[in-house]
Image (cartoon, rainbow, N blue to C red):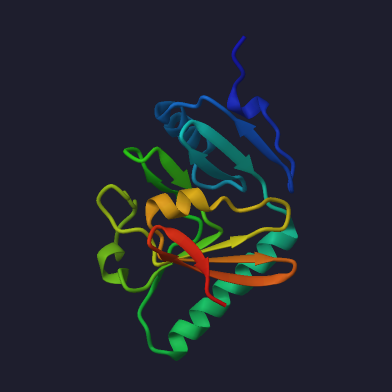
Length: 171
């Protein structure tokens, strides 16, 4: 018996983990889920996690995203915000949807693009994750080469910089 994706319900604040998911199955799931959805995914070497954020999560995401935009505007730094764009690289068997991401140094490279292909395009310069009901796995971001990762937990904001292939908390 095969389940259809629409038969699966993941409630806000919950997550579902699926194993042995091929890259083609991931692509099919993303296509079936569509662009306009509440759920976020994280995929690494056959493991697919599907999460649905709580309203509290979304408020924190919007606040931090707005903060980054204000800071960059005040510093007169050009940037391209790409929200929770799906970042994926088939060769690395990695995919993740940050809560927010920004192209800053590589902003000019992605202007006008409707799709980001990390086997060709650079990763975003900054990814933001809000960890209220789940915990961000750094592996995806490290392997994809995202230079800076901000993680907000109820205890506060942590800022990590990618140094020699590993994230270091520099604050």
